[in-house]
Amino acid sequence: MIVRSNLSVTMLVTAPATITLFLSGSQNGHAFMASTATRKFGVTISNTIRQPFQMTSAEEESPNGESSPPSPNGMKHDADDPTAFTVGVLGDLHIDPRKMEDYIDGREQWLEVLKPDKDGHGNVAMVSLGDLGESKNCDHNEVNPFELYAGTTLCHETAAEYLGSFGVPYEVIGGNHDLEGIDEFPTDEENLEVFLRSHNKPTPQFCREIAEKTLLVGLCSTVFRDATYTSHEVMVDDKQIEWFEQLLVDHPANKGWKIFVFTHAPPNGSGLRVLQENHVINGCCWLNHSDDKKCRNFIELVRKHRCIKGWFSGHFHLGQDYQDSITFPTIDPSEGPYPNRGSCVFAQTSVMRGGTSRDGRQQSRLLKGNKDGFEIFTVDHQRGGKIRLDATISYKDDTHEVGVYQHDDIAYEHDEYFKVYSPQVGDEGYICGAEQDEMCFIGDCDITKDSKCWWRLSCGRVLGVLNGMLLEYDGSTMAPLGLVVSADEMVGKKIAVIDSGIEECVLNFEDDGMDGADCADAGYTEREQAVIMYDEQGVVTVIQPNEDGSYWRKIVRNKIARMKEKRREKAAEDFLRDVLEVKEEDVKDRVFSSWGPYTSTSGVAKSTGLQSVTKKLKVYSS
Image (cartoon, rainbow, N blue to C red; front, side, top):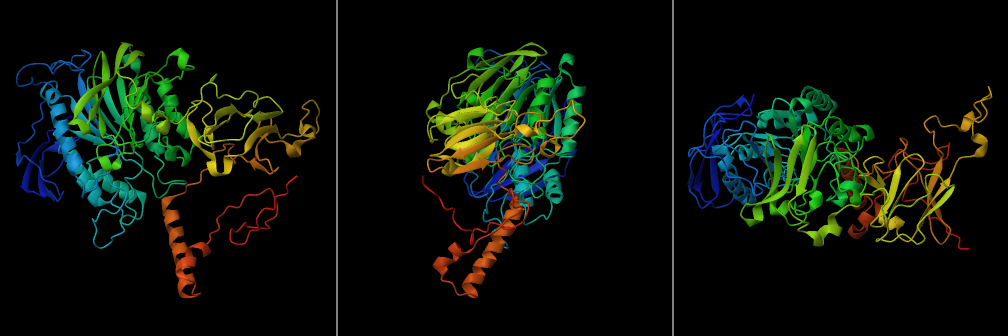
């Protein structure tokens, strides 16, 4: 069954700075009462009255009886084709109620883009990839001038009004900011409930049959306050994952099903390389980033279930002018080994409002398809909604596709700034020997900001140097996982990988005794190795792995915990100022914090390493 909305919207501009939306009907399969809502957007719209948008069902012909116009490459979408569909994909909105001009202009452009197919085959919908509100105070709460707008009831109600005004049904999933109403809601559950209620969603995830045997599927981030590490990690909960896995089993490719997935962040293994560096080093780049098994599970599902044809994500606030913002299931053999991305095309989505863009681009995605394949377009909001064809994917059969990029890297001059290097087997940056040699020197020179190399340890972990930093990469997908050593500590030093096992500890399984058992590690079947960093003064730093064997540092912690810690430090500053009468200019430099757990090789708790009292390392020069 194809789920549709019979939403009608009338927009009346009652004054230059006020917009009134009249909403009636039903949306996303859930009835709601007619309502009137007024928002002061602070903009002037040229058209004083807009006629109501009337949905056209797939069974009705367009008014002129014609098919929608063919796409630039000739893929035709007939009005009577039950497999034809059109989806508008919106990236991170980050609505600021004081700055609505770009949103209103963008919607007007989208109405023109969607009209031919809405009047034709009628299988049209919008999908929002989450992060609906601005993560700052937007002068929206006079009682609490410090409250963040994102995640509040007002934010979700405003976003629902906006998304509901495109004249077609919409779906939405939550991003890493959509449960950020931390001053209004004490728990993630209460915040999520308001998100769901505002958008008439029965569950965090969604599934819409947009056309015959074609599903739109969305997975939602549901954790913020309860995050173990950074609250901005996009985390899909176990219940949704279980639901998703069963949905894939129930809709196999060999039965003709085609599934397009929508998440806020992309999965590890997507191959998308136009990433923002801060998402990589903070451990919030991929879905369920901090959990190795769950993080890798998504690409494993893609490899197993070839019904997944496309996967759209946002999160990075970067444009769509780079070829690396779309990846195909396979690549040219000259570019590297087979990436094993199933039958799935991954597409990154930009942003609509200028103030939220990290590279100046304001763009959305348009997805159009039918039984023969699909096309991915860019809707350029800086050029009046101009449409550009980015990629064409043709189905050879239920499990094989042919993809063609339709343009080169338009923004090539920005390539090095935004692209995060991903290692490839056989590339010039590979350092051979770390897997099997007793001692392997990583490069001949000191590390610089231009150094680019990688190596694989005997345990299978992959480390690499990029932009002066030591990073860890996923051993299977080669996707960057996170920061191990920062550039300020790494630049000017050298790296070596050395054996750290002791020969006397090698077990002799032919004897009945337990010789060497005291130094055996049941979790390791490979050789023990030490990754060390050293300098010309003879100072060596051992880069210890985490308890789970990984190396990337989960440094950024839960936002709620950090907020409370900042308040404690603020109290300490007030104590210095008011009780100890320290001069204002000296206060900041005299407040220190200590954290646990404390990690050392000592079996006795001797020192907590307080920054305010720890002695400086004495360096002996040879």
